[in-house]
Image (cartoon, rainbow, N blue to C red; front, side, top):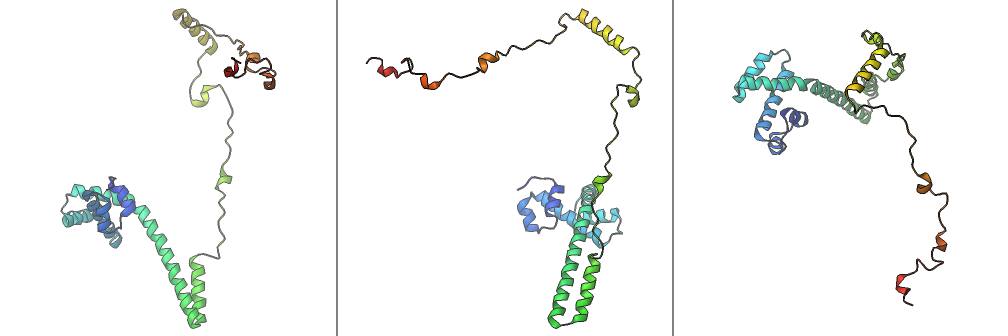
Amino acid sequence: MANISALEACKKDLYSDRATLMERYPLATAERVIRIRDMHQMYMAEPGSSCRSIVSEIARRYGVTEKCAYADLRIVKELLPTLTESKRNFARWRANEMMLETYAAAKAKGNVAIMATTAANYAKFNRIDVEDESDDRYSEIVIQPFVPTTDPRVLGIEPIPNLRETIKRLTDKYKAEVIDIQDVKYEEADLQEDLLFPASAPDSSNDNHDGRNEDPRKSGD
């Protein structure tokens, strides 16, 4: 069983059947998903209902405390925007399917009038006569005219008077107090490139010309 929060369970299985919920989640999570589902249905059936009345009904119906019912209500409110949009998209899809079925039935019967009316409704519903809006949001992005500056007043900070002298004074002070501080100058690194990257490698074909790399087993011959 998945040990996840009630919110995540609702996002995945709010309208799954009870047997599926019991199989996938612990008993407490499954029962909470069912309560939240009923609470959502109450909201959809009576949008004008007060939160107090819905909480009281859920608490009475399932024998839970009002505190528990209010916790369920918070999840419902968090889910509402997503559920409402999903329901609207489903309704649009179903309306299109119904119009297509009506058109097909009218065509089968040769009813040209109904075919024309359904086609007009389909075009109007899907706004076929409206040009697609081009996504030109990126054209509104303007490169900011940033200008490099060492003046801290652009951030609302007043500059330190005689900054260079202050830096030198503090550097001299801490160099005198801490002997480990010392100036480090740039030095050329000796990479010994002649040894690491010789100009030309020895010819491997002449490795055995003097017999030094021959098979040691032949040394007794």
